[in-house]
Amino acid sequence: MEIPAKPAERSARKEDTSRQLSPVDAAFLYLERKEIPLAIASVFIFDGPIPFDRFAASIESRLHLIPRYRQVVVMPPYNLGYPTWEDDRHFDIHNHIFRVQLDAPGGEAELEALAGRIFSQLMDRSKPLWECYVVDGLADGRGAVILRLHHSLVDGIAGVGLVKVLLDTTPDSADPAGVPPFRPRRRRKQNPSLVNAFATAVQSSVQGLMAAEAVLLDLAKSLLGDPTRVQGLVSVLPELAASVERLPFNKPCSGDRKFCWAQFDLADVEAIRAAGGGTVNDVILTVLTRALARYVKLHRQTVVNRFVRIVCPVNLRHGEQNGDLGNQISFMPVALPLDVKDPMAMLKGVAARTDAMKRGHAADAVALLANCIAATPPPVQALFWWGIPQITLPVPLFNMICTNVPGSPVPLYSVGRRMIATYPQVPTGYELGINVAVQSYDGRLFFGLIADAHVAPDVVRLRDFLRASFEELRRAAGVKKARKARARKPKSSTKPSTPVGAVAVSQPAGETAPVVEIGAKAVA
Image 1 (cartoon, one colour):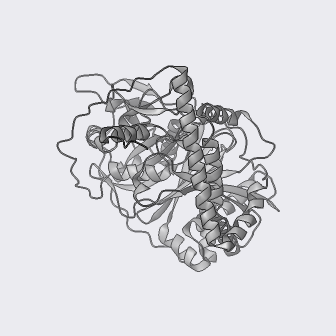
Image 2 (cartoon, helix red, strand yellow):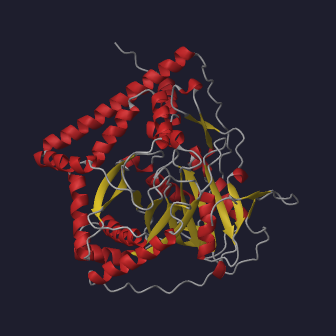
Image 3 (cartoon, rainbow, N blue to C red):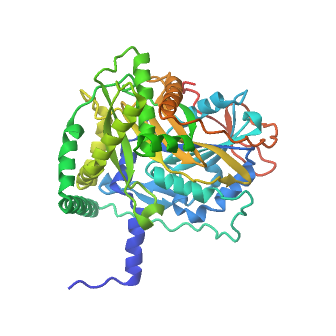
């Protein structure tokens, strides 16, 4: 007979579980290296300059709502278990929020170049894995903030949720009063004995095996409940197993990054979807695929009888889990033809293929594979993820990642400034020379294109092709271009005093702020 645990014991077990990284979270730590910086990010643009000290104070006043922002990753003895989150006893907000002066003339190109240099850097694992850059010197009196979060901390859905905590829904939202002081919890003593570490590894493997069994049972239950889904799964297996060709940007990456963006009216996207069928994500994939076809032709390669396999992350959260941190995602790979000439025929074809992958539970199959990996001992997982980038396969498993995350439908604010744009970034590396992130916000759809600066130095051409492909699809769908709202006059900005290309950490009055260079080696 099992003896019920005491309340204090149950609380301790829950605390231990919340501190331990999941196999997926840990994988992003094992996989990361100079050539593969694994942080998700966003570039936020505001209608006026962001006052640094007030912004830093606002963020610090909300950190008690996100305890993970004050925790560091601690590796277990002998690496026989998963890493854990432990409170940073020396936490200082000024180690995470920096001030950056944008190069003149402070336009879009200069901001994209700055973001690329920041995205090229690995995050310091001795600190909580997030950082924020307040950008001064933008043209037209605007302001910008660049936020980076390590992928072991959050996925795209969780990242959007955190942004909603850090920003406000009204311009006059007051910062929380009476914020409790930060009292770091005492770090648990690590038992360095090999026996204990081995026992922890066995326990983690059993938990992973149970998770894999749960996914398998859910998949079987779903398939048995609807026999047509079995046919759907069988129909997509050949596509999942089929190989794809390398495209011009599928080459080993260097670590230096370039970043650029585009945006479209969400009303246009919805009208195109209504005219051609499918989902908003189908419209995105159609525009992206047609832009990629142009890019492939630019590099003097044929698109005839060629496909691009794009992997789309799928959120696995349900109900109350939507606020959870960490990574709760699977992936749905879809192979799309590059040689379809008619835009509307392409949209219908994309909708049919994504629908087939959904009905075939392709994302569930990928999740099952991930849980099988998680069922192996943690040291084996660490070795597996560490070794993956060392292997060059004859053909790639896929060509690109494209993530689409819904953002706030209403305007958001920070210290009274209205956010007018948000450009997301999903990390890239290995042989994925270009990846794409998409996020909706306040009636628009924002695209962020991240590229290896040596593999795809001309990524801005792909951005131009996105715009051309979208206009082509909009006209083919018979959709009139949405009327642009009158732009708000930006608030006046003050002349920044920080040296160009440097980061100055705000210090108390009378002290000199240290200057830190940002990635001078990156290709601009």
